[in-house]
Every structure is written in C-alpha cells, then in structure tokens.
Image (cartoon, rainbow, N blue to C red):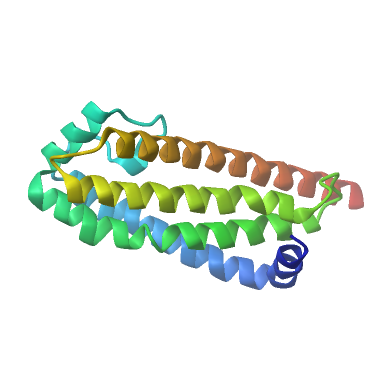
Length: 185
C-alpha cells in the first residue's frame, strides 16, 4: 500500500489529473453519445446491462439479449464493449489521482490517501468483471447461465454503489477545499 500511496502522490498533479480527466471524459462521452445509442437502437425499449444500477434478473437478461437480436448483440460486442474495456482503467486511475490531488489540498482526517483510491479502483474492477460476464452472456445466448447473470448483476450493482461513494468523496473533498480556501482569505 505504501508503494501505491507514493505513486498516487507522485502523479497527482493538476496537469496529470486534468489531462486524464479530459481523456476519460472523452471516452465516456463517446460511449454515452455514440456506442450505447447504437446498441440501444436494436432494443429501444430496454436498458442495457451497463446502465442498470439496480441489477437485472435472468428473465430480463434473456429478454434484452433476445430483443437486441444477433445484429444488436454483435454491435454490443464490437462497438460498446471495446470502449468499455478502456474506460474502467481510465476511470480508476483518473479518479484515484483526482481524489489524491484534491485531498492533498485540504486538511483531512483521512489517515492515508490511498484508502480513498480503493473506491475508484473498485469501480474499475467491478466494471471489468461486469463486462467479462456480459461478453459471456452474449456469446452463450440463448443458453444464458443463471449464475453468470446473477454475478454480472451483482458486479453492476457494486459498480454503481461504489460510483456513488466516489461521487460523495469527490464532492466532500470539493466542500473541504472551498471551506479551507474561505478560511485562508
């Protein structure tokens, strides 16, 4: 953990965080505005696995995969998922460095900055796990395994929950930063 803390502190500069934030945002916006709509166009009344923060059942998974059809499933595999294998790593690194940078700017009772970095790293790992299982569901369709759907759903819920924790930590850091700046004046 000390090595992680040293790396985070070394690279958590405003310039590095800004460049990574822009890159991460560009990948996210590409998914949000292009790849996801392309896949959703095959099943417009359904929500993709990645965008189901409350998870999904076996029945829903089978219905979605069926509604997408073979062309939609192929688009999911060749359009959405490749970018969604870049995004989790970018998110994990960018947001870990962002929290490190932000919390170094304010007095905090958080004992070790790397403890905060666990949250976005967890989001990335859960997202990768979810993606691998989505690929498994798509490739095995119509013989979708209930255990694969259950695990994928759990990873989707965990990804969503840890994303919320990250957002709380981020805005908590921003509030601390603003309060510290206010009392500096």
